[in-house]
Length: 599
Image 1 (tube, rainbow, N blue to C red):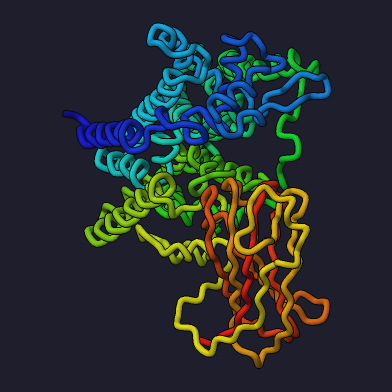
Image 2 (cartoon, rainbow, N blue to C red):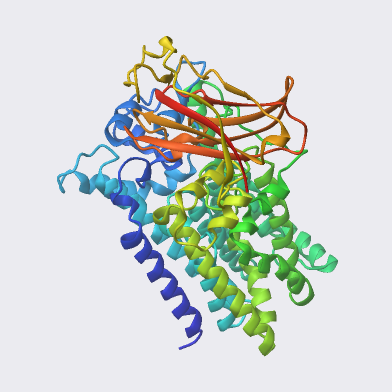
């Protein structure tokens, strides 16, 4: 069979994506915030039930009922009230257009199968989740076809397997496939395919396809309009080829006009929606979120422990190296892929929320893998030319694949990946481990974790809050005695337990207290903090904290401690206190104990 290795690789990849979706982490059967239609996906999707079921595109009045019934986290906030009084969807309509076939199938089957035809019951979850995997499989098929035009069959096979097993494309196709990135990857693969076909034999139909694909990508994420670079620059590797391309455009200007009109027609869907709902042709629906064009977060976006692209998907470093081999060996592919990737990275990391919320690594880069697969394949081809480089490259790829599978597991079932909160100490402590002591979670908040044997322990102060009579306007009973400290929405800070302290008194401070909550706080930015602060006069010298709710479940009482090493700067006292982090959930604190000790 011709090109049999790449077909086998595609089949393995397709089977693996389906298995992960159906058996390992079936979001279509999970409730609430883990459902297929939740968080951002619910915002992309709201157009469809609003139009076809509730006939309420202006007020989106069903969103609160949906939130109460299905708890798709984030859904009430995916539309904001415009000054017109109507509600405008936060996200553009491109994903809704792409979900439409799956939605219609689910809507036709929901009632006959005995489910509510409300847009969010099980058939809709299955349709969006499974349909998204099918989109991924389609994208990989066209990615395979594109790469075969320029690389050997075995190179294409290896490249496909790297994308699926060694990058976070796995997460954003098999598990979180209903996000934009999977669909855009497939649109880019189709766009490159259509571009190649157009230059082989230009027709109006192919020009129409190019325009529709670019328009749909931009309707999905407006910044994807840079996709126009692909058909414009594809195959241009020299000045002579650039002149030939301009001459080609001159001869085929009517076909180019068809592509432009098609692109504008698709993009205008959003303009007409905004006009219908708000009365304005243009609405900036992201409100207070935007770009820092002059100060893009390139370094953080690429290398940070929080969500650095190459930190969590290091195998794509080979794609970046592949631009060197691509420039030397296949220059007509270089400029389109290189300039697109350069601009894409700049735009992705100019976004102020550069870590992109609950992202495994950099989800913003996933759709660009359809373009970066070209230099990646070029590097694969280079590495395979010598035995020693092939074996070394294979070893790296196997390690990166294992790490990617491990990260994917920890993000969904293992529990060690902490979305939006990762940092260097925690990353290094948990990397490639399947278990970690509970105290290791403190490293998400502090870079200090004492795990040795404490010596020369001295008690400095204890506080049981028995004299705090203000505490008991509190929904929770005291932990011990008649009174405990109570924090809630009104009382955000506890009175600090202050102790005179000097560098001669020891090496470390341990603050310990008993905590009880009513309901667990899941938003880490609103978790109650237990804080140790070193002070010199009125100056804060050093401060460390842990988030208490990391260790508490609803209704649980637990004793917790935080250790902090003496700072090098002068200090004269230590303060221990709690802050409710602008949260409103009640927390009871008692039996605060402050000690010093030595290593």
